[in-house]
Each structure stands twice: as structure tokens, then as C-alpha cells.
Amino acid sequence: MPSALVWATEQSARAAICRGAEVGDEVNREMTAMEPAQRVVVVDFGAQYAQLIARRVREAHVFSEILSHTATAQQVLASEPMGIILSGGPKSVYADPAPSVDPAIYESGVPILGICYGAQLLAAQLGGEVARTGRGEYGRTPLTISGGAEAGSVLLRGRPGVSEVWMSHADSVVRAPEGFTVTASSPDAAVAAFEDPERRIFGVQFHPEVAHTYRGQEILERFLWDVCGCAQTWTSASIIEGAIKDLRERAPAGRVICAVSGGVDSTVAAVLAHEAVRERLTCVFVDTGLMREREGERVEELLEGKFSVDLVHVKAADRFLVALEGVIDPEEKRKTIGELFIRVFEDVARDIGEARYLVQGTLYPDVVESGDMSAATIKSHHNVGGLPEVMDFEIIEPFRWLFKDEVRAVGSELGLSRELVWRQPFPGPGLAVRIVGEVTPERLAILRAADAIVIEEVKAAGLYHELWQSFAVLPAVRTVGVMGDDRTYAYPIVVRAVTSDDAMTADWARLPYDLVEKLANRIINEVPGVNRVALDVTSKPPGTIEWE
Ligand code: XMP
Image (cartoon, rainbow, N blue to C red; front, side, top):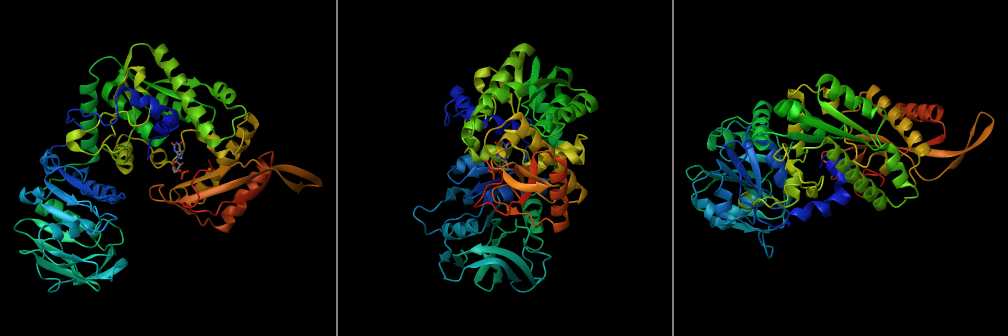
């Protein structure tokens, strides 16, 4: 998920950003101080399976890098990985074309673990047999260790004879390649796990990375720690140390700017950058007027107060409101906000003067999803989303290698509060995308007040951290009501609360009725201009989380 800033500017910036370098330009692979010497490469066969595996590897304190399956063996091996994991994927090995991996990797001597599609692929490539048996398995499935719990499989050591795993496959390995031992089976997959410990190649049909697999993380740890011999050196402390070293190397002198939005990524990036370059850092907070209640003060209290960071607080609400006058179309709204944001930022940067570096909170999933996945051909769009290169800054992305949960852990380690580190996401264009129709000062005031009540009550109910997001939306209709003896004709507020793991999909949250009742009462009684509250019970898909 892009940082709030990245998103804020995304619509208009993307085009501008790429001006400096054509997407697809190849640049030399530079190892940065952020990247530890030991790593495991996760080969991605699509549909984001690889990201979860890569995160689980990091949780085992081993650095992981995701590469596309189109990478050559030379590219996969370029960074001298300690191990290679072939991910699952949505395709069949019988698809035409079927995503594949350069079979030369099997001769490299580097340990390999194939998961689901990855297991089928390595079975097929090494001379085993994969078949469409017509008996796929989906969901929780019992896994039986061949020969019982004591059988001595390297990967499955210590597991009970029968345990639950997560399956999701249509094809099955029906014969393991020569030299491999079948180490586990399931009701509809006779070869659910197979291994050749001598060659250090392993395949599992199930998904050890999925939480529903009983002690799945331990299977990954067996592979990483015991088979690959990885040291457990990837920790928040080592990430911070590497990032600070990298920042100092890349910005040895001169002013460094960091745009902050109040969100987790940009705030942690600012605090980290401050650790690295101290008084050479200036943070810029552009208050678009589309922020939540007290947002600007909060940012000031934290950065100027707690961390003594030099902060420029740009109060640009008037400019944004004027630009948004009469704008109703959601895309036009986003574009207007994004473009103006850049203009305001450019003005400030000019005033700050000699700034040479711009720190951005771009995360690893943004980099992976933008197609920048080949170790040997990192493409020169180092400014994945964000502020335009035409501003002549050197862009520094300390989180370019990090997943969101790692940024949170870094934030905690740097002394940021749990409240900030676990803040729910907030869109860069702010409240504007939660106001259907025109954004006016009056409508902003209504939404901001209702939003503050939603957050306050959700927190009071102890649900804030269980929800991915919870907020208020202001539709562009008014309805009739009666308050006291008077007829009212006022706005409804829609309460939107969702659970999600990654915002790609989301479920509407089943808020307790007493909380819903409290929200409705408070919003109607305390927010002038509102006479009705509705609850959004739409999941994603078919809805999106935001209304615009
Ligand atoms: P949707 O509405 O697409 O949102 O389901 C998915 C997640 O992305 C957030 N979001 C944004 N975040 N700038 C951001 O920083 C944006 O323009 C933006 N649009 C959506 C949204 O809050 C949700 O978490």
C-alpha cells in the first residue's frame, strides 16, 4: 500500500515522475547499505502469493527479495542467495504458456523450496509427473506424514503424524522426481510433500505461509535456518542501522526534505531520516484542509515537540478549497488535489532553498507491484509514485525494501507510540474522497466532526485496532427528518467500517449494535446539519473501501 503522500500525489504525479527516466530503462544494480548480505530469493509466479511468503521469511529474521519468474538463472543467482523459494501461482503447469523458471537454478547447489505451483513446477522440471486428477483440494486439509511423525523428514520434523494444512490446488504431483522421497500425503494429493535432502530441494503442495496451516512458519524456518543456514539477522534494529547508514551515504551533505502527511509511513520515514541527518532535515507538512480533526497540531506535537524535527507547516486549505470549487467527479477531484499538492510543495521547496534530497516512504509492495522485480535489472523508476523528478531532488526511499509491518516495527523501535504506529490508513486526498459531490467548508466541517466521533467511539469500544478502517462518509443527498417539533432536511452520514489484511479485499465489519446506536445518537445530536445515520454493509469487491 503506498504511503499517504505517495497516494496524495499519485494521480497527477505518476505521469510527471516518469519523465526523468523511461520505465524499462535499465540501470546498474547497486547494493545499498539497506540490503543485508544474506538473503533468500522468492520467485513470483503471480497473484501476490510471493509477497506473503517474502513477509513470512522476514518474520523468520531473514531478508527476502521477490523476483519475477521471468528472471534468468543468472539474475536469480546474482545476489548469491542462501536459498530460493518458488511461490504458488494461479496457473497450471499445463497452461500455454505456463510460467516457468530457468531450470539451471536446480544445478546451482542453492537450496530450493517449491510451494504449491512452485512444487508442481519443480516436480515437472526435474522429471516427476503432475496431473489434473480432477480432485483438487481447497481450504483446510489434513496432512499425513509418510511413515509417521518420527519418519525424519528434514522440513516436517517435529510435526504430529496428522495435522491441518491449507491447500489450494487443482493439479497434483502424482510422481515425485527420481531421487526424491515422498514425505507427506493428503486425502487427494498422494505426493503432498517431497524432498531430496542431498540436493537440498523440497516441494510442498500446501501453503506453509498461510496462517491456517498448523505451525506452517516452522516449516519455513526449518528450510531457512536448518537447510539454507541463514542467520537470524534481519531485525528492526538491523533495519534501522542499515537505513541510517544508507541515508548518510546517499545524502552526505546538504539539506534533506521529507514530506509528512501524518500517516505511519511518512512519519516513520521522517523520524528515521532525522536520526540519520539530524538538523540537515526539514519536514514539510502540507495542510490541504482535507485532514482529520487536529491533524496539523498532532504532527507538530510529535515531530517538533517529541522529536525536535525542523517542520514547515504549510497551511494551504484555502488554495485547495478554491481549486475544488464545483468539482464533483471523483477522478477530477483526485487529480486537482494531486496537482495542487505538487505545486504547493514546489513552492515550499523553493523557499527552503538548497535542498538536494527528498525522502519518501515508498514501500516494497509498491516497488514489486510496479514491476521492478529483477535484481539484475532494477528499472529506473526509483521514484515509484510521489513527487516529480523534475523538482531536481535525489530521491531517497528508506523503506524501498520494507513491508508495512516492518515499517511499523521500525516505528516502534524508534519510539513512536503504538497509537501512531497502528493508525488506520487515511487516503492522501483526505476527506475529499469521503464527501460525495462538492467539497465545501461547511460539508468538510460536518464530515470532520462526524469522523472524529466515529474514531472516538470505535476506540472506546476497543475495536480500533481490529478494524482495517472505520470512518464517516458524507453523501450528496439530504433527507427529511423530525427533530423536536421541527421538520429537518439535512444530510445523512454513512458509517463505513471494514476488516481487511491488505486492502485488496475487505469485509464490512459487523459492529456491535450498541456501538452503532451510540454512533448514530452522537452524530445526529452533536453534528449540526446531520439528521440520519446509515451503515455501509458492502464488502470489497464489489465495493471499494473509500466511496470515491
Ligand atoms: P479502495 O477505496 O480503493 O482503497 O478500496 C483501498 C485502500 O487504499 C486507501 N486509499 C488511498 N490511500 N491515497 C491513499 O493514501 C488515496 O488516494 C487512496 N485511495 C484509497 C483506502 O483508504 C484503503 O485503505
